Image (cartoon, rainbow over all chains, first blue to last red; front, side, top):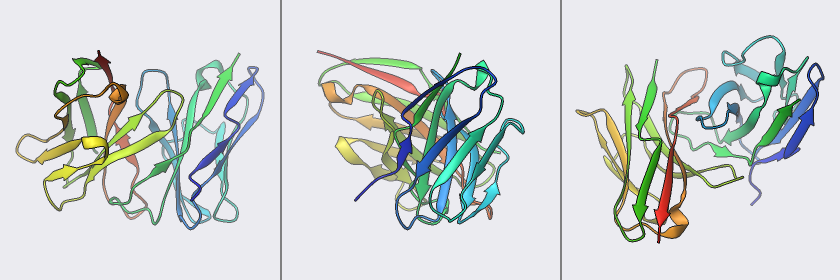
Length: 115
Length: 115
């Protein structure tokens, strides 16, 4: 079956611009996660959705970052007024129910470069 | 709060040699532990996970890991390295929380396999 997909695979933007990153989780998975991975580092948690609601957004670095999942499936991570420090790989993962024992399945990521 | 420490950001082994990648965790409650592998330009793939059943966990591609509570460790091993094992490996910990179970990752270990 289809895995987690993310679009675009690469995004280059200029400082100050707005970007949207899309994640399409595995069908039937109620839990969806966004992580950010800087070069040479492990992924860092950003936000967790259970269904349509953001159950934990404590990892978002500031109010320029926002994410939605309006129908409980596809999610969009939105970054306003991008800064060079936002350059990173943005990873999306989904799991069947969000329990600690559930496997999180990761997409291939979107590499964001802010010039 | 939970955390993971991976000792050795780079490990180099010869083809056919033992692979040992170290992971120590810190957690105030019994953790769930995961090992993921990341190949270049790909998303993270689960190798194996510990969810409080058997302490010796077998995963894909001949990898296994042993949960040792007394040592707070979850080291990853493979008896005989193959060239295709060259990749970055991440140890991660999760806790069941009512608001979902984010993964906290270590910084990763880059494995090189020499012919």
